[in-house]
Length: 509
Image (cartoon, rainbow, N blue to C red):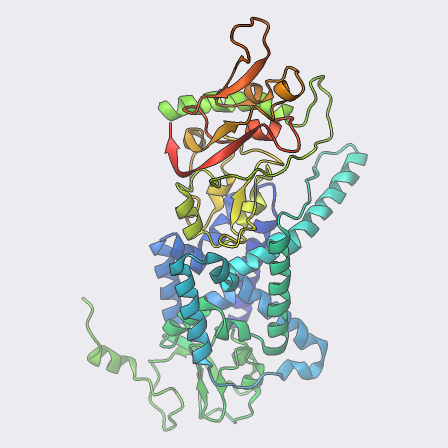
């Protein structure tokens, strides 16, 4: 029964977290977003003491339930291992006990902590479990999901139905796609051959929780009086932590999957309080004291933002319709501009600063998956590899959209309201008049000023002394919020005549 409950809960978490990365409409995030925020590493980086303490308490009480139920990467390994077990009948009992490789476990953990402390996140996040699964879901599964959606949208259109709408499918970062594919292959091979090898040798979260689960109160316990030493439990243990010769379980590696309980034909393994049983003549229960002994001998622990938002949102109403249109009102094929070389990168509203954004981001790419405007994509920079970056070649950051701040589980992007976002300056527009079509083609334009939602761009005469002079853009920096509408809609190619430079620290108007 416990195993069935565990499988049901694990399936719900696995499906829910996966859908968070696949649902580009943002519909499910209001219901399932909490599943991302209860992941261990994001909760630590977000300083979410309630979640961290709850997960540690859960581990102290019941062992590494987090690894077998909540962590999507752990559940993925169980699925792959289960598939292998079904390929041949003899594969069902293919595991065997192996001593803990503590030097490897703690070595990976130490390297992980040191890399985070030094700010080398691009290497540390490679082995972060939630982030690794997020990258695989966002880069490998999401395109397949979107192609399927587009096929349904095409079919629905033939039946005059608008139940589905098509979305653009594109590889946002080739390096990240390759890393996600390699990660999937490596973890799949380890799971196929060794079950939870990754969790108990590489994963830093598994090592931390293993430290607490070593003395967990409830856990699978071997009754040596009933045990016939058949070894079936050890052969079924995907964590390879049951030593049948000594009748001992390494609880630091046990993920509380309950497989051993179901496998045992004699009822010799039960999930129960490790400290409440009467002492037996066999020293097989890890020499733990009774609850009474623990109790006796143990230590005793005694109006302005709303106005700005209204103006900005009103300004976006026309811009949203004009993004891919000609001056005659017809739709035109979009020719994407080249990415500008920004002196300072951009970070979404709610990030507060570039440093806070890079220090807390786990590169899970959940924000990339939900961005409806194709503004966020994984960085290709070595120092911030796979972390999201903003760029406006395919869209611009609409002031009424707060999806990335609503779903970020790590505190890299803090929640902001529409009113707050509309008054946060994440960057400032910079004009290069040498590239402006007014000067290069001697034509009227004003596209940037027309579509600026905060009215930060004013058209001024190119020749002040000539009343018939063409107008060129001038930026009023105090109003610019860095949304990128001007950059995205500028007709100059291959480089736009106006681009947005980020701010190291965000400002509020």
